[in-house]
Length: 356
Image 1 (cartoon, rainbow, N blue to C red):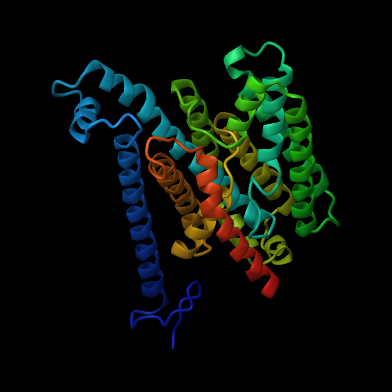
Image 2: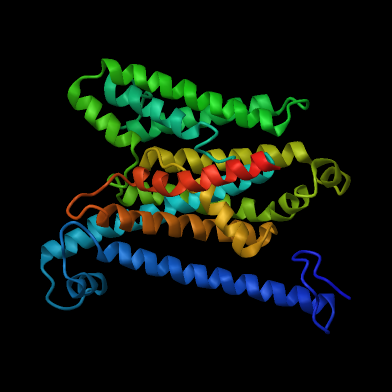
């Protein structure tokens, strides 16, 4: 009896090739369905908001028809649409970064949040907001994102340095990242302790995660980084899939593990650091997105990577909607919503790891 090597299911009478083609069609169909779900999420995100605009007025402003008030057009085009686009870009970036990290570190708990990138970015932002320490020659409007990016990227370089030691197992890198989380959180707490009231309020809001800084520039920069990184990620999909068989077997099949890990962590750091720089601390999206994608399309990275992008973007879109609807009239920081959703998933994964 023929079976599919990937799914383990019984092959139809057409043989293994027919079973493989059938599995590919199913995965492609799931990708299309998730893309449609994402489009629905973005539309619902634009239609909802604390200003209470009527749906027909928002739609009229979007398509440029009808007698919509000028203020409606401003709210839709300058507030809601940039915010919805930033949610998609942040979710897609963090989820793609998480998918590559989980494979290259061979640990399902790896993500930009658990490896300390978000905490490092928070420390960089705290230096600017409270102490006024910024990178030289950087315009004021980009001072916070630039420092957040610098510290997040520096943390990844440090993880790279530790990981380049051949004797270091992937689990140690996770523990090193967790140490970074506690270390940077302690430094942020010290800055919060000495911060004046107005700066403390700004810093606390930033560390809770927010899409309120969405504008054309932030979307262009983050979208540009995502579009620049994606082709390299998709090009590495085959090597990442082979790595699922184990490092020794992957190297015997011609995969350069050191080069693959350097490229994956570099791409993940660029995506995560840029996303966190504009949105603040967004927890667990980089952890949950890849796991949902894995349940839908399996471990083949040709499908897993695009599915992770779609899942992360959809999770952030619906989290953005929930942040506006949980408490009527109050816009919750989106980082709180993603943490409430992601924490049970994180504990479930932790218990599964423990039981093995």
